[in-house]
Amino acid sequence: MRFKKAEVEIVESPADVAERAAEETVTLAAACIKEAGRFSIALAGGTTPRPYHQLLATKHKDAIDWSKVIVFFADDRAVGPTHKDSNFRMAEETLLSRVPIPGGNIHRIEGEHGDHVRAAAEYEQTLVRVLGPSGIVDLVLLGMGEDGHTASLFPRSASGQKNGAPNSLVIPVEAPPTSPIMRRVSFSYAAIAKARVVLAMITGSSKAGRLQEVLVEEGELPMQRVLRERTGKTLVIVDTAAASIIAEASKN
Ligand code: 6PG
Image (tube, rainbow, N blue to C red):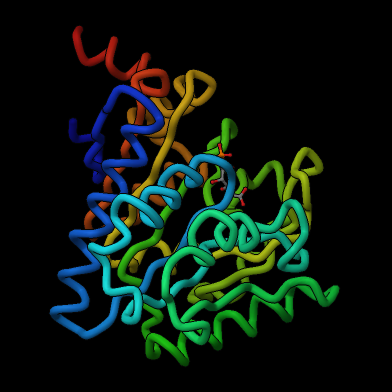
């Protein structure tokens, strides 16, 4: 199903979402490595990516040349790598410790030193040093919160988001008080817009109403803005629970 600039694929379950995302990742990685000798990926946080990571570390492990993979994080909380709320920790446990990626190819957001503004600037320097001045990542993984946030880009009304310079690739964010950790570092809208491919995984009935709003209506929710600003391939893979409203609407 095509919405605005996003291709939406509805599959049955969260496991099917993970499988399809893993298949897409394997295909893109092979193409990027053949074309450029490397594949850069920015991982998402939250809980949805867990089964996807686990599939990449097991069923699909041998389908990717991990020595040519470069890992970034689309966002992280300003905590240490072993903190329970660290996106890096989740990725390390479910994927990175289980595949042969060279240690120097894993670029963690180092936000634990009490200055997330500086951490954002340093991460942007890393992105540009590794990928070149454009900072274009081959694949950016995203999730979506029930409020329509993605990465650590929150609705304006809800966060003291400092978007940095208009062309910043990485920004410091003060997330809403409802977040487990308020100080965060995130890819900017510009960084996500220029990614070669964006792949969003959204599951669960709690996201259904927001997904319909994001895909169908105009607005300024972060995921609406991300989809609006995309020019490259944007795939939104959802389960039937998250798609319950858009699927109903498409019948009419
Ligand atoms: C974060 C994530 C965030 C996440 C959404 C969805 O650091 O919190 O990057 O954007 O993708 O909140 O989270 P779930 O996958 O847990 O629903």
